[in-house]
Image (cartoon, rainbow, N blue to C red; front, side, top):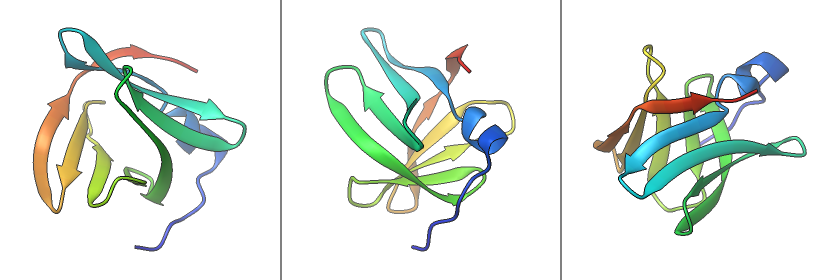
Amino acid sequence: MKTIKLNRNQKLSWLGRYDYSPDKVLKIFRQGERLKMEITEWVFSDLHPVSIDEMKTDISGLRLKKMNDGSLSLIQRGQVIFELNVWQKTI
Protein backbone atom coordinates (compact mmCIF):
# COMPACT_ATOMS: atom_id res chain seq x y z
CA MET A 1 0.00 0.00 0.00
CA LYS A 2 1.43 3.36 -1.02
CA THR A 3 1.86 6.07 1.62
CA ILE A 4 1.33 9.82 1.35
CA LYS A 5 2.79 12.83 3.14
CA LEU A 6 0.51 14.71 5.52
CA ASN A 7 0.75 18.43 6.15
CA ARG A 8 1.21 19.73 9.71
CA ASN A 9 -2.51 20.22 10.43
CA GLN A 10 -3.39 16.78 9.06
CA LYS A 11 -0.77 15.23 11.38
CA LEU A 12 -2.01 17.22 14.37
CA SER A 13 -5.57 16.00 13.79
CA TRP A 14 -4.45 12.42 14.59
CA LEU A 15 -2.83 13.22 17.96
CA GLY A 16 -4.67 12.10 21.07
CA ARG A 17 -5.62 9.33 23.47
CA TYR A 18 -8.43 6.90 22.71
CA ASP A 19 -10.27 4.46 25.01
CA TYR A 20 -9.09 0.92 24.30
CA SER A 21 -10.08 -1.04 27.42
CA PRO A 22 -10.65 -0.26 31.11
CA ASP A 23 -6.88 -0.34 31.78
CA LYS A 24 -5.39 0.61 28.39
CA VAL A 25 -5.50 3.56 26.00
CA LEU A 26 -4.33 3.89 22.43
CA LYS A 27 -2.11 6.95 22.21
CA ILE A 28 -1.08 8.63 18.95
CA PHE A 29 1.85 10.99 19.31
CA ARG A 30 4.63 12.67 17.33
CA GLN A 31 8.25 11.72 17.60
CA GLY A 32 10.18 14.13 15.44
CA GLU A 33 8.33 14.22 12.13
CA ARG A 34 6.86 10.71 12.53
CA LEU A 35 3.53 9.68 13.98
CA LYS A 36 3.56 6.73 16.35
CA MET A 37 0.98 4.75 18.26
CA GLU A 38 1.12 2.91 21.54
CA ILE A 39 -1.44 0.76 23.28
CA THR A 40 -0.46 1.03 26.93
CA GLU A 41 2.54 -1.23 27.62
CA TRP A 42 1.47 -3.67 24.90
CA VAL A 43 1.73 -2.54 21.26
CA PHE A 44 4.06 0.02 19.67
CA SER A 45 4.15 0.96 15.98
CA ASP A 46 5.08 3.69 13.54
CA LEU A 47 2.12 5.03 11.58
CA HIS A 48 2.26 5.44 7.81
CA PRO A 49 -0.45 7.62 6.18
CA VAL A 50 -2.23 6.11 3.18
CA SER A 51 -4.83 8.92 3.10
CA ILE A 52 -5.74 11.86 5.34
CA ASP A 53 -8.04 9.58 7.36
CA GLU A 54 -6.25 6.22 7.22
CA MET A 55 -2.92 4.93 8.54
CA LYS A 56 -1.19 1.61 8.14
CA THR A 57 0.90 0.25 11.00
CA ASP A 58 4.00 -1.92 11.20
CA ILE A 59 1.70 -4.75 12.34
CA SER A 60 0.79 -6.97 9.41
CA GLY A 61 -2.70 -6.19 8.11
CA LEU A 62 -3.57 -3.66 10.85
CA ARG A 63 -4.73 -0.14 9.94
CA LEU A 64 -6.34 2.81 11.73
CA LYS A 65 -9.19 4.79 10.20
CA LYS A 66 -10.29 8.15 11.60
CA MET A 67 -14.08 8.54 11.59
CA ASN A 68 -16.03 11.79 11.08
CA ASP A 69 -16.98 11.94 14.78
CA GLY A 70 -13.30 11.79 15.86
CA SER A 71 -13.33 8.13 16.88
CA LEU A 72 -10.93 5.56 15.42
CA SER A 73 -11.55 2.14 13.94
CA LEU A 74 -8.91 -0.58 14.08
CA ILE A 75 -9.13 -2.56 10.87
CA GLN A 76 -7.47 -5.91 10.35
CA ARG A 77 -7.48 -7.42 6.89
CA GLY A 78 -10.47 -5.28 5.85
CA GLN A 79 -12.62 -6.01 8.92
CA VAL A 80 -13.32 -3.51 11.72
CA ILE A 81 -12.12 -5.30 14.83
CA PHE A 82 -12.37 -2.47 17.36
CA GLU A 83 -13.87 1.02 17.61
CA LEU A 84 -12.17 3.54 19.90
CA ASN A 85 -13.75 6.70 21.25
CA VAL A 86 -11.64 9.79 21.69
CA TRP A 87 -10.65 10.26 25.32
CA GLN A 88 -8.35 13.27 25.07
CA LYS A 89 -7.20 15.25 22.05
CA THR A 90 -3.69 16.67 22.21
CA ILE A 91 -1.79 19.15 20.07
